[in-house]
Image (cartoon, rainbow, N blue to C red):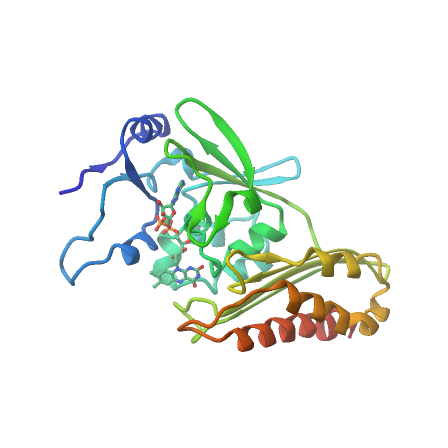
Length: 282
Ligand SMILES: Cc1cc2nc3c(=O)[nH]c(=O)nc-3n(C[C@H](O)[C@H](O)[C@H](O)COP(=O)(O)OP(=O)(O)OC[C@H]3O[C@@H](n4cnc5c(N)ncnc54)[C@H](O)[C@@H]3O)c2cc1C
């Protein structure tokens, strides 16, 4: 029988984490699937469980200087109601899970689960998110691309808890997100593409391109971004095939139960072409 810890403060949670080998349980929407058991039987957790999803100290959403800061127990539903969250980000969040999942699922859980198909991860990569990791003895800040080391693998230490996620609160002239799944709700992405771009006076000042479910980690296509940056938008038509070539060479999708390598490559390239031609140049 496993023990369940329900601390009343973050400092208590950090002490439990320091002295006990526990699974951190936030919304539990990934964990309850991972350790599912027969119907009506309690989940099969291999070790003790530490609940953190109820802790008020992890539920804040703040706007400080140029940053948006989310406590790690902030749910998708909380983000959907919040004034500081852009309309584009809310549209994206509405494509994650279902209402029930969004009511308890968290960004931090998505990041710590480190699935290459995690739908919030392309956003975190594109917006250069930093995670604050705390233990009873120290605190450190790690960039998302260093935090996630591979599928299901992060560099979280055994005494740490992710307490905050920080994003630069930048505005972009264009935001594009497409998630391709088997159906509209409760579907794991076969491919996802997230792009933010900033076009001023007809010139591409900034662009970030991230692709989910097409490699062991979310792929940020820096080489394609470099090629596009500084270009006059109407001239981008001439380099689209070069951009798509870079993308096709950069991603490393696999064949699995959800899709094939060929399909994923084709769809990722088609979506980026759709953005460049239909949303940018037209
Ligand atoms: C029906 C269904 C539909 C879903 N649909 C989608 C979807 O469309 N898109 C998508 O991306 N995902 C989807 N998911 C997966 C899941 O809902 C998300 O990944 C969600 O964001 C996980 O958050 P959580 O708080 O529930 O994580 P949890 O299950 O609580 O935790 C996930 C992992 O992160 C660790 N963890 C959580 N918080 C912390 C922390 N603060 N510090 C350290 N470690 C931590 C946990 O120990 C665990 O290993 C779906 C799941 C279900 C069951």
